[in-house]
Length: 440
Image (cartoon, rainbow, N blue to C red; front, side):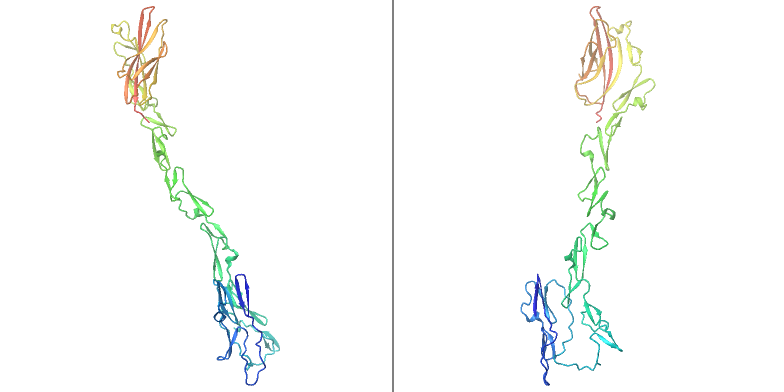
């Protein structure tokens, strides 16, 4: 018996001799010699297989495992799968002649006579073969062969499992099983029709748990949100973004958060200009007021006021719209401004100061006259002052921050003096200033 070792696999085969070496028998002797790997069993009078795995100390070295087979043994890796063969019929005792009463067959081995011809014997069909139960018997002319099932290879008389995973048949993962193998794919992929390649799974079309938008990517998927939403910590759920909490400057007045967006609202009397700014509604122009025909509608911030068209009081007489004069013929007019012109304006609360709010302009100028401007009445708390620009104009200035709603009625007087003619006169502008609440 000669051991053969190649790489990590060492397989020891026994070479069977074609014939047992024998001596010519005597009348009282029988042959007791057996081929290598067998020994004579006097009890059964047959040659019996030797179990080298038990009789030879350390028959296989290292991580190799010993497998006994007829006439020898194999050293295989411990992970090898071996299909054991059934015990073959004992060898015919040496020296025992053919005592059967079978008729003489003149045909070669593997054939039988059929009239004057020799025909092949189908050992597989007659079950006259020694193939292992796991092997397939294939009849040939004059003989037969034993074939291992798919997924196994023949080593000696044994069928050893083939580890197909060694040949990288699978694109991702390979799992070897006795006689076969299976391919598996990484998460996000599935087996193709050839059961070896892996193709991407479109999770979005298979019910991915994205609450809004789903984008398929190679091997996985990504969830995205609509504008105005942000992705939650779980990576699937979208939650509303409260834009109003980010900044107080998103809206001029008030920001209102809504699902997926925000909107700006304005106080009463105002309307949105664009999407964020507030613009005063001029009720006097739109007709959204309750003034009568005898009243004048004056627009103010966030609303309007109705004033009587004729506001002249004795001794003044109305001469035109918003203008009253005090005739010199009336004795009560001597210490009063000759004329009063009515004007209206609106400012908002908490306006920055000092702030120019109204310019006074003389409508008539006499040659050689000098003009001065002053606040005649209505500014009891000193919230305003006059800044004269030149001889014919001056500016009303807001001196202190004021809070509304509040209304001022200021008499702004222009005094004209002509020293050459010893002449002095005055005119007044009665300015109604409405201070509205701070809208923003």
